[in-house]
Length: 263
Image 1 (cartoon, one colour):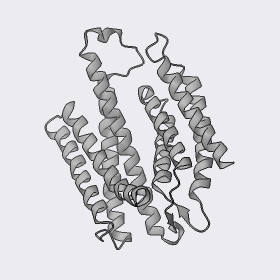
Image 2 (cartoon, one colour):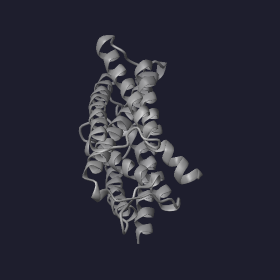
Image 3 (cartoon, one colour):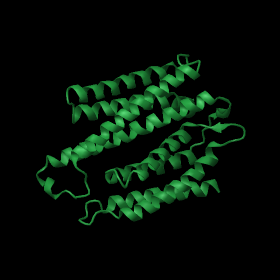
Image 4 (tube, one colour):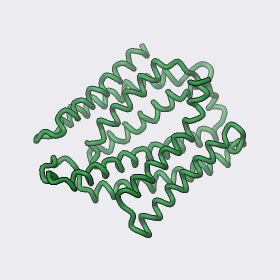
């Protein structure tokens, strides 16, 4: 039964992405309503699949594939809920495609990492804050890509032929920095919660996560300061946003890849 929900979720994610991509440059624009409906059904099937994949007896299977799938689900939910008020249509095919791939990875890659999260309330708080921070900063990265795409198109001679569904550059830039600020604040709080509730932030197995997360935090603080003080835009913002997310990804998932896939 869980396999069925996974296949339904992945199939509908890919179909929704295809529908949006297939007509994005059409003068009438993509069929957003159909894509939205398919994505909502996919999200529901994804949630049912995740509940079965993660909740084990005893404990919870927080394997890297399950965590990635959970992050993708949270990002997709956020993008769907904000679709009515934020300009994210161009990003949705990427989000849906990534979510579909994580579902398939969680289904077909046989790895396990059993934890007893319910016995450690502090760990629950730390994990929740970390997932929120990573999700916000990952969405910020997507908006940075959108900003780069719009900037590139505006520099071309055919910019006037761009489809009207593309949002104004300044609007995307404003949303990007709001996301960066919120994600950075959650990252700060998640690190503080780690030092408060956990005893092994600098242990042999966790030190690299802490150090990489702190470096990523410095990158995001530097980026926000640069935008505020020096008015950074364009290439600096995109480069630092990408660098920060890569560092966080290595911190959150790097050692898990080695332990669960390579060893």
